[in-house]
Image (cartoon, rainbow over all chains, first blue to last red; front, side, top):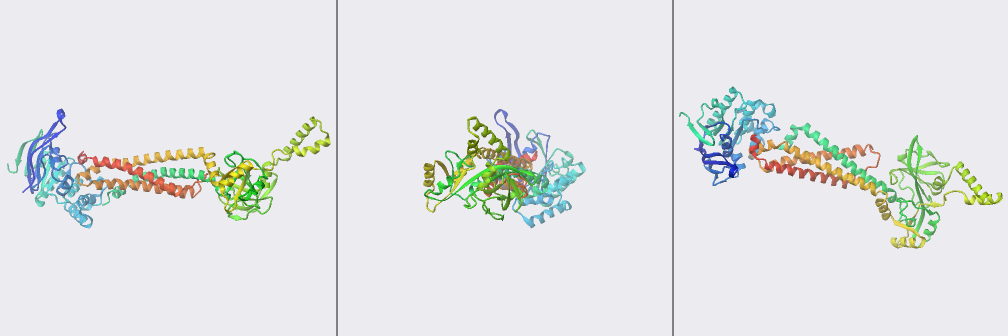
Length: 231
Length: 401
């Protein structure tokens, strides 16, 4: 079953003579449990596509469906973007995007609280996720005290907090060394398989995409090659 | 999860330092409020605490406090005989500076009719009122004198028989109450050397106009003596029950060629005359200080918000509602203002006023304190709203760098 289906997506920045087309006629889909990679050089439109999928940026044209529901079509959002995002999408980013004044457990619980899940239940679920990611021993630490790998594991725990059907990861290994980067990728593969979530990872590092179900290469706002596993 | 408290807890040092700074600033505002009110309270204390219906002074003057007023002492007798007047007593006041307890102290002497009682000290904290026509005094405790202590004034020694608390003149100087004749004697009596010089000067002038030795001796007492000791500054008038104040005042003005003011008019004269410039200066300084404080508090609140724009963008990316973000900013703004104001109040009321650290009278009126708090709070909220506006406009993509 498709978790995400993007049809004819277009994104233009500016207007008139200053208009710049960042994405042109993008067709793209991922299924439950699929681990998809978005590859491309800097400025190819990877982050713009990710921002459009996550409803942070409003596309110029095209259609986005998630879990069978149309979220963008006919030139406008079809759902309340912020609520839809917190209920259905988990984010992992390359830098430290944890809230700096919240400790590790609070960072994970915050994602649940914003979704209406509070108190003991949220904390138990937060600890469960931190144990799963082997970060329970750092639950009271502040983000500033964590290493790059630990930060990413907390970010993954937070992304999983609301059991999202879609996880978006923007260069999640960029600030890590190769060994730690590969560990994070392994973890994301496991999550995709175990939790049947669709995981889309933006990266420019070819070494990190081994074992991915699909690899989508972007060049100047267009998909050049889409490879399926085994192809 | 209370994000504002979590943020403050993790940045406690920075937040407390900011609260301390705001507290000191607002403390100065409250002290300035106190100086302003203290100046007014001091200015009219004597008028308010002299139990009289009318102040009768020299015609066309705004005396006795706003300008000099001199009227003959016997005027009180004419006034006492006026219709509508139940009691009239003479009153005199002037400032002197003497050494008390080894220190040079400035104070105001009030001379009043100790048997008539009007114009005398109100509530005493120790001792009794003056019961003799001479050589007794009631002093304010601020002068540091004790009961039965003696003070040399003019040519005599005066014994302290009673003590008042916070009895002061318009400049905040403590009061000393004396019987009218004693007060007049201290004011007008010259010392022996000055008297001798005056007499010999007059004698030689009388000789120049051809008076014989015998004639000169007879005339001399009539032409020497300087300023008349029979002069007073005002007469305090108590009206008969049912007497109409304005009517009685007009009658006094028309028939005796004097000016008569009610206590309210007398207070207005002082506030709009002698105290006007000082009060206006303090008022302006107070207003400027409040404005500067609001700007600084607003700036601090705004900076606190701006420093959190990235976490705010992250919260928005995670799907946080506008309410969550507004609450984060407003709560911190309120805590900063409340904490700062609480500290300011403690500093002003408990430290500066409580320990008497300021040389002048400080009066912290609850109304002034509440108004200042409301103004500063409003300033903080307006600044928060500017921060909220900025935060709500921050796109979540800002979190991505």
